[in-house]
Length: 127
Image 1 (cartoon, rainbow, N blue to C red):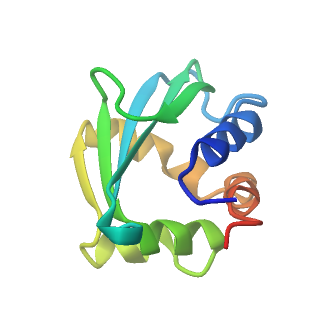
Image 2: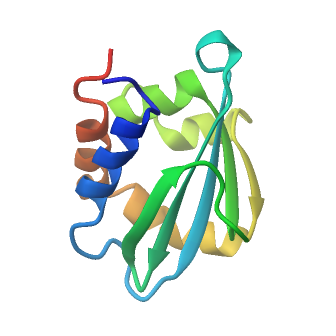
């Protein structure tokens, strides 16, 4: 499967929409992934309502609460577990715009074993 393809997004929604991730949190996250193959820039989004993933897709979401800009190689390495997302953030290779408070509320989820399992499943057969 191709990383950041429509098939990948469909898998992301299927795996991510099972149960609640965050208690009582509504957040719209825009992801911008740069330096992809051939210099591509990919936009995708997640919409979480009442703690559950209710939507994700390629492209842009209207009125995002948070926009996270990351490098393709770093995004893939973090999902594979080869890099820690906070190391990438502290190294200054991630740009976060918008409501940092809402992003802070995501930290317990993003550092959980459940999220690590989800992320690994997202890239299990990505070349």
